Amino acid sequence: MWSGDRWALVGVFIEDSIVTDVFAGGKFTLEGTNYQEIVEYHSATEYLGQTVKLYLEIKSDTLIQIWPVDEQGEPVQSHYYMEKWVRFE
Image 1 (tube, helix red, strand yellow):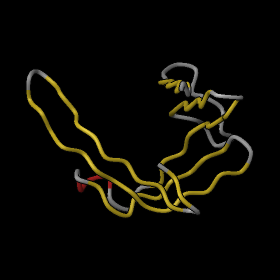
Image 2 (cartoon, helix red, strand yellow):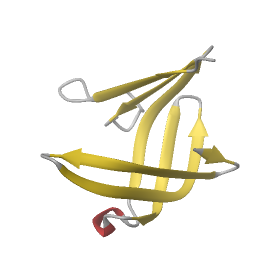
Image 3 (cartoon, rainbow, N blue to C red):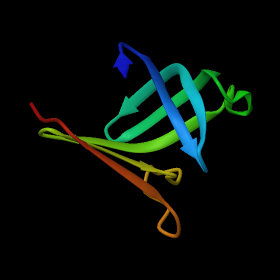
Image 4 (cartoon, one colour):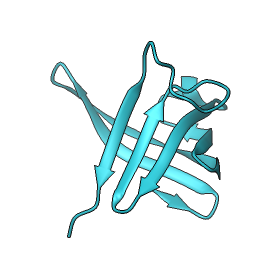
């Protein structure tokens, strides 16, 4: 979720029947489709202080996130993940 210049996430990660609570948050910037978030808190402390860069685009009712991206904000073609979130009522 986003509010002002802050982001946060809360969820559950499940791998091989092991359930882990996940939470994180910090500050973000968005310039065009270039999105960066600074991790100020995270349930996995190795992420603290990292800057995460993504491609982020909102088209109508769809939010698209792609990572990792290069310095120009373009997806790394050899290996990237994409999430598409569609709003419905």
